[in-house]
Image (cartoon, rainbow, N blue to C red; front, side, top):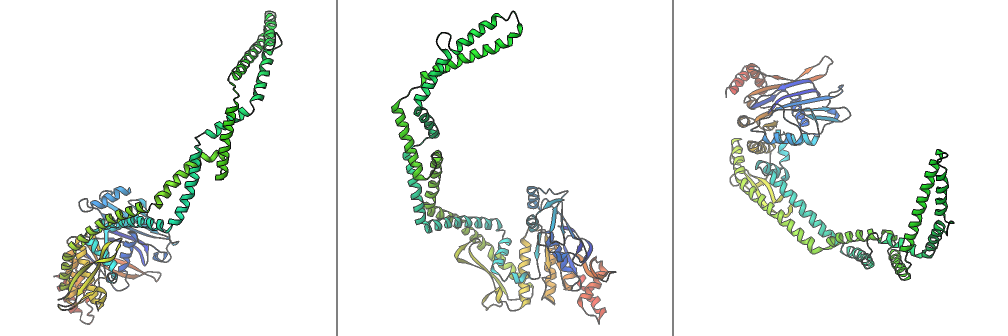
Length: 555
């Protein structure tokens, strides 16, 4: 439930803090005093879009804060939502704050943590339900009727499932339509890919083969030169008798070694010579090893040459570099798999049919649930219509199959009224007077509100066009709702105001700078009598108005 609403520099409010009670709270005041401003502020706190005109002229920013009391046994879904979103409830209390800036920007917080507008809206849908003064106009749209009915019947989760199934079916249908439309182009594209892929498959290129063949071919192509050079190098290393580099090095070892006892400083030089001899011997060993393994096979060279020519020819036909052919084959295989799937009309059709069946099953279940809820809903609304001095009027919920499936199911739902026993069933749009439409809207709102799990209900001048004895019924209706919900109602009817458990008067006060600012005053019994007498409007018969006000309060 809403505990406190605080406003700073909002529209015509300087500074305001209101404490709310459980039950029915009525807000009254002269036209233009700012009653609906309070509901506008709540709307902003719960995700409505803001604009700079909502900041009081001359102020740097507007600050709005609302505190809600969270009951674990009633608001379990809200507590779960807060936890999942990272906004833990503190001592069963929920604090929402929003700041508006002249630039048009705004910031929001939930329990002190930054929040997005979409998060405010999601949270707001669980905390507050608004029935505005123009709600009856919205109900002229069949889409609004369907949404209200589904919400009343608790069908929200099933409606979401149907919408997701519908989207999945549409996605499959779009894929099938696209494949059918592009069939010729896809076939041509697939043919090109298959030709290129077949060429590569016939080539049978293996990973790393191009590099290995190139290396071996290069070696065999220069075989004679390689052999000659290595043999020559081996001769220079080993030589004949003492002419080889190794022999020369060994002789130096002996000469220098014989002189070491005469000058120890020769030790470092001898070490260098020793290392040089070892390296020369290793080089000679490598030469012999290379010559032993070197096999110049003309047949092998011709084989490699032919393979290289085949690779080059494939690369030329495919307009690719030879080193890219192996990767290209993998790429083309993947493309072929994708195009095969995209052009397989049979599979695509089967998937679309399967998706439609899943949607159809859910939509039929939704239709059955709607049919089940329609009769009791219509019965309850009819009862309230008769209470609201519309005796003989009957309310119906018409459900008919749609010509085409939709995201919200296969039903065409519409609210109908029969104005008298023998009268025709008419859509709400055909109801003649605004007063009648307002009362129908109020009856629907009352029934819908009784079923909602939302703790706080807001009624902004829903009694427009209503008066006399019907006003008493409206007051009693809102009072009944106040037994199970926190109800906040802006009203001009004294019959409604008298039913409130809490009475707040909104009034304008002139400021020292000449501007007007709204303020809210909680009324005691005597003040309520004065306010209700004012609302009765008998200015020339004040005594009578006061008496009537007392009588209304005693009901």
